[in-house]
Length: 442
Image 1 (cartoon, rainbow, N blue to C red):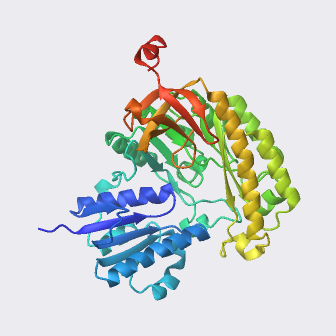
Image 2: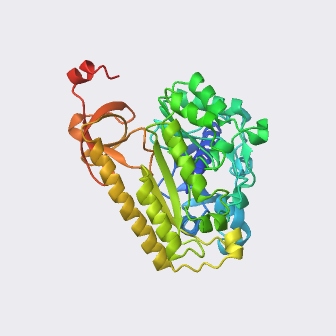
């Protein structure tokens, strides 16, 4: 008997990945043969989980829908379903433009997607997922939506208000992931440190972390996206004192100019941000601090940009990313401000920031030479195994490169001696067994 084939395509962020993994598990339990991001277009059903956060992501999502719409016209796909963020905000417009799609769903539409695909939702499987990544790390989405009023961000419009997931459900999901062999659990949300306010009347991220740490055997627990406001000492001390919570503070500042921060409605000032960074360094010594900035926000002057550049030079972040401002028509900034910084200027400013960070990263990496670091090997790529230290998150941070002659196994931890470096990578080799034992390194 032919089992129906379902291909789920995931675009966008790690939160979308979690949604797709839950969908895949439900389909799998319903007797379907499931694939994720399969390159081939032949399938009974294709489900595209879209992203609509910024213009580039929207274009990628539309291109993917059009690709499978063509496959359906050619008889390679029987049923085309579109879900996710893009579909949430542009559903009606897209329906008329792409009639090949059989159904359109927004976010939080698991039950609707399953029913349309001919599969009955199974509540008892809600904690379970089909891991679509390497298998040794996975994401745990602890909340949906956001209550912040940042003027550039469309997430509250797409995902709605902040909704925390019950702690017992997150513990069940964590245990399920551990049973599947996950060694690094990465907590994600739009505003991690706001977790619990809606359910328990107060911030409960530290409590959640302590429970997960005590109830599971994950070697690393990583936090992504800690909003600068409301970052409590109890949370920082939990990060500092835990045996397995990564000393990795991912705190998106977006800008440092008071004028820009006010226009962005970030809720803090340059002085507040500087004091917070100093406090983090004092309370969690040695923690890797990662941040992101937006360049080319409406009205950003040369002086605003220079202030940001000097701040980056002074602070020397361990990890840094920069985004060119994307004018989102339904956001406060999209409605109230003119997108008056030319794209070329945005590109030049972003390039300057990354050039500065390249120099900072090179200096920090040179200081790592000779050090022994615990590294999680992710994959083999050509002549190297690629891995990460505690200071590096998958896909966004730098890697450790180890020659394949050492025959390492992806998914395992190794003690690596750093022998070289580049601007954004470290190069190393595993310790010989005798040296490892002499140093008493696990």
